[in-house]
Length: 454
Ligand code: GCO
Image 1 (cartoon, helix red, strand yellow):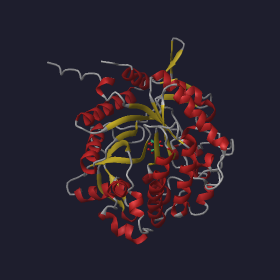
Image 2 (tube, rainbow, N blue to C red):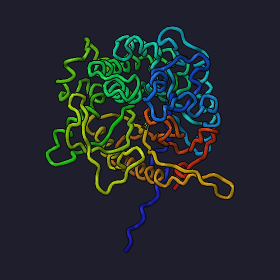
Image 3 (cartoon, rainbow, N blue to C red):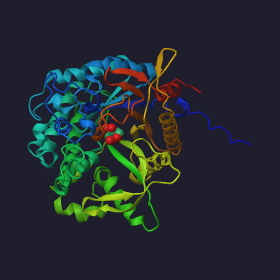
Image 4 (tube, rainbow, N blue to C red):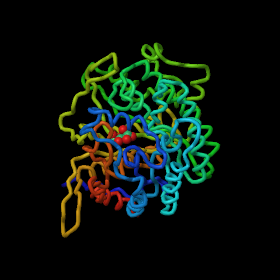
């Protein structure tokens, strides 16, 4: 007898107040990099440095979202989304990094937020998605403790102006990527190769988060407003017998370097040999860093199977592929079980009271086909990826995980950092030369889930 088909997911499987969203980020979609007073970010500098980004792509135009935001909010409304996670560009709000605010920059986000609310879409704003004002990097960037204080000032100023309308405030997006890829591995802005600067950047980003939380709480005027942070995670299992300790060390470095200070008030002891050499710890820092928050955002994409060191000096691991697994265009293993395992771990081992999946999605080689005079993108791989990962999220929720929402990465194909525009993560296709948007089959599937009431 053939196995019973798995029941289709239904919206009613999840809490009635569940946040059904998509996620984007300022430098990846906005463009308009020289408009309305925005100053250069470290990603403008990095992407304009030859050889740093594939095809020497930059975020100069991206998805032209700065001018097309109404159309894009219209797409979210058409799909039936009730939440949208975007990021605010610090260089638009405080072009000098500190001091005077740029009201033209604030105005863009005020118009975006108003457009969202008009369509009953709740705004979730990330304050830092890697586009640090270059003027601050010129003074040492995140390796300079002052940057944490400037972040606190920026967070206070923008939340005073949007605090009456923004539902969720996310201080940092994936600080691990920003500090380790940016200051140690050099493959992200500012493109440095220094363990000392990476450790200092790690600590100062954590401090920036802790300093910003009280200001956001003060200024978030909505009765349902909440404050949190988004971290990146990969699900790690030993890639071979005997690699258990190596896997535990990779987990400490990849997954706990930020998680433990934020939710346990201490760095992982396994990392002390490195951290103790460079940590710019001052009294009360850990208390500030572990200021309680309302939620943690989980960004999950893949599993890794470490087998040996790639380079111990930079804490780089060599992972093996898994026979029989499917992979995305990023070379990431499709492993929905990893999402279930991580969500249940955070609930069980860290007692985090509310979790959002603030990013989950996949890149595939998409192509546009014309049928009966209309354009389509039959992205079956991405649709399957989402079905499986929503299924894993539902399992976790049913097992008691306080899951409050799911933001698919991403609404639009966009600037994928070092990969430029070659990697498409959107559920909506962007034809960059014309900026035409084409809804993909994966978006239509998401719409069917949102409009299901089984
Ligand atoms: C991240 C970033 C996104 C990426 C996405 C795909 O998680 O790395 O938040 O900006 O584009 O994750 O890599």
